[in-house]
Image 1 (tube, rainbow, N blue to C red):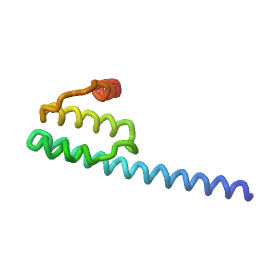
Image 2: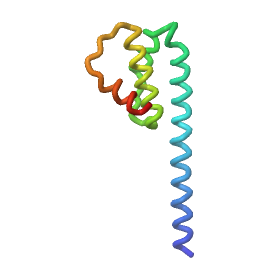
Image 3: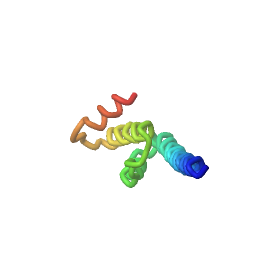
Image 4: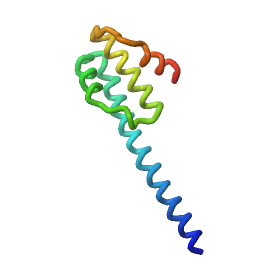
Length: 94
């Protein structure tokens, strides 16, 4: 009986952890979409916002979306590309 309760508690904790992480990724996706719509009109502002954003905790899909937006923002602001690794990782995802 105690073992069943232990497994139930572990399952609930895992569910809560996954739910919170999913909500965080949905919120991050909403922010990325907003920046995507602003990118044609205000590439410098979006580039500054992306620079202040920390993509380390994003899902792989959101991280690829972030990389795509960063690549486009860098291109629109005439920033020289030092490396193509970001572009390659985005291309590999999509």
